[in-house]
Image (cartoon, rainbow, N blue to C red; front, side, top):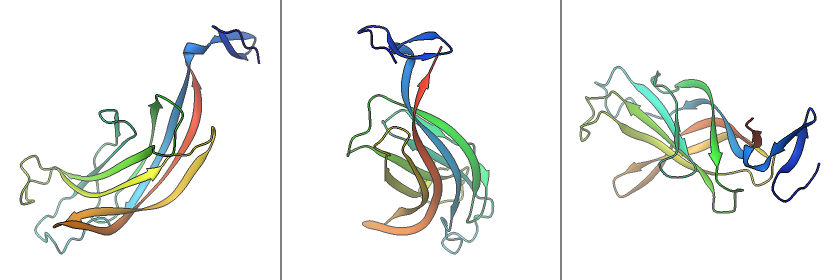
Length: 162
């Protein structure tokens, strides 16, 4: 490894990589959710489609495609979120599970309902990883109720764009 103040941070196949081409990113593997939507609440909603949206910074979201699933939708999707700086103690992966294309739900004109959300702390070391089952909460009246889980993994990685 060389350290020229303007240019070099590493070598790949004897090529010099400019510092501006190295980025920090969060690699995501979004597997599935379980027990996220109680069919007894809206028994007439027969076709349920779910989409997952995640973000670290507002307005910089990664979203899955909608999938069908009554209580346990499976996405098996992977994605990448570019990070502006190294994660600190106040950085989280924000997760929302959305029921989409559901025009039978009362109180929604867009057909989108948040059925669960979570804030998961980011890994704090380079090449760190968090994998697991994370609780989801949903708004119920004036408060929140724990309902369902999301299974995912996230890895903090360095990416080189050439």
